[in-house]
Length: 359
Ligand SMILES: *Cc1c(COP(=O)(O)O)cnc(C)c1O
Image 1 (cartoon, rainbow, N blue to C red):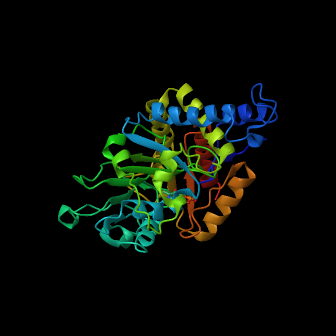
Image 2: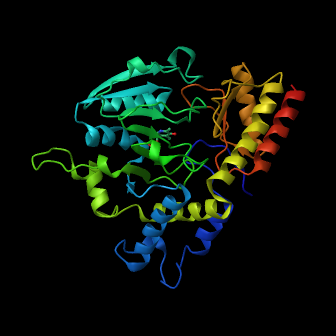
Image 3: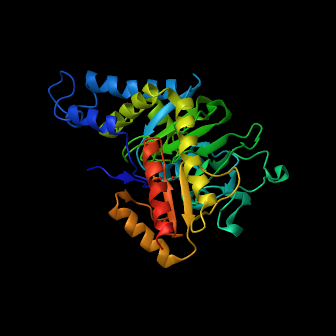
């Protein structure tokens, strides 16, 4: 029996996608082989990776002057690739809204001067800080935000106006969850394992003018240059072939459901069910208030660690798994990505009501 999996990542995938992958596991089309066994240089695989790219472009309305790259190393490797590829004045701006934003900031410091524009650390990252434009550096190489904060459950609802400075966003936990105006960004990057597929690849959407050549004496490793991926359609070396195939199936599923506006509607509905309950409950409360609440990751607490543990344990017994908060903060967190059906959230709320009534 399949459970309702509220994991923050790797996360639940649409059942239709898993069934389709299962039906093609031994033999993909008329190829007589599994996608896992295929040469990445074969015609069949060429169609899979270019089909995946086209679907990302179509579903996300990616403008023509952007490249879509498939890169291993997860979102975490982008924390280094972004500065390595954009450094010119050797400085960048960061908004510190949680653990991932902090990691991007710290990694950038290996290469350039990282400027903290604002932080919400004073209140355990439970809000998005106001941004004072006088702290933006007009000659920064880029301005970095984490659009949805997976661990703390906040999201930007308004983008900072960075003028000519490229806005770079980590969208690992919100990509494909609602429409996004790609043209507002210099770079968008996301690890696949939250809302796009299994772990193993990051999708990086880069404006072409930010993909630079490196001088012949550059020490930046070949595999850390966007140009390497852009020049070879992400096939300079063997890409994570099966993960990219799975991402393609997920995109086909998103498209068949009506695309990103339909996903937004579906996700807002689910989030409302959960937040409305949390706001009315006498036992449970959401740790984030206001309109910067994430649609994807919903942290909550009872205020009592023992009770939290007991809740997580009982929930697991009933088939609601991975409700523990991130190991750094405890409490609970329900990640309700695209693939989480409405019934999963409705049944979770029903279970929470019963739990509350019975303590
Ligand atoms: C999960 C996550 C990461 C880390 O992703 P990896 O692919 O494991 O490196 C980075 N940023 C955000 C916002 C995340 O949710």
